[in-house]
Length: 335
Image (cartoon, rainbow, N blue to C red; front, side, top):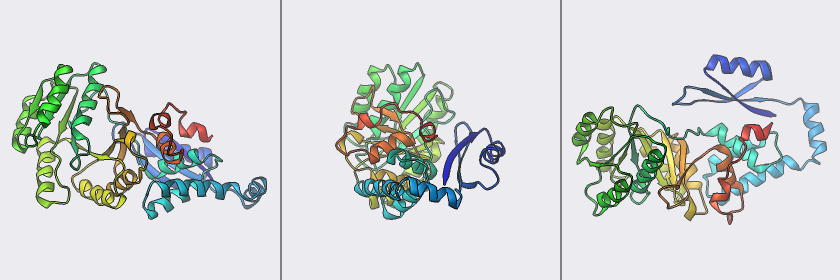
């Protein structure tokens, strides 16, 4: 089976390209739409003839495709990925015409997840970071602000976490260095007024939310009020290395709050990423950036299918930074 991803401005154009290159026998595996650009990504497959499959099987000695599938399965099992998700990814990886487990895993990830980094120029809506206590929301806000400032953007930073001791002071220590005035909003109504007063002043606005218990209805309700008042795009922030079952349940909860993307933190301090995949799958959230360093100025990296596959399939003793080095796009590597 041949598997290939096509990108076009719209669905009609994408389907025309699929039919032109793969013919009418092509099977549509997945369709995805980029929420920022509106581009459509279609992954399509073309079944090989029985004679072709037999020839490939003879050429590989009957062993290569099972080896690729088993390598991907073992890697995902090591990371603690939930069993049902492992099966989905292994089936997709086995359909890829590649003898490289990383590339097969990358294609499988692309077929099952969307990768959409946060915009670094401007955005019509603010971004509000949601997540459990200790997930790294506050330092992530500082990292996002620093990245935007270094690119010459006008940046607004708001904290709604005025209860926990030291949180405002911690974030303010970073914003002062970047010459950003940290705004404090005590509650949904205050947040709404603050955003209305500052409308049009910034290219990008990042909002830090309190680290509340996602399993408490009252806390969920408060976060929902913040999201509604701000009209912001909610981003789920989760530390890597947690329990996959817990992460999956949290993903469902944050999905109810409208999260669109998942930003994973602490990849430099964990060896297993199953919780990250479980949360993204249950929340149906897009992967955006990952935090690979505690340094504010250079701690975020945009995630793509190849970099995530390298993290999953590579030797767990390798450094995260090595797995996230620049790499040819997975689609080019598969052709």
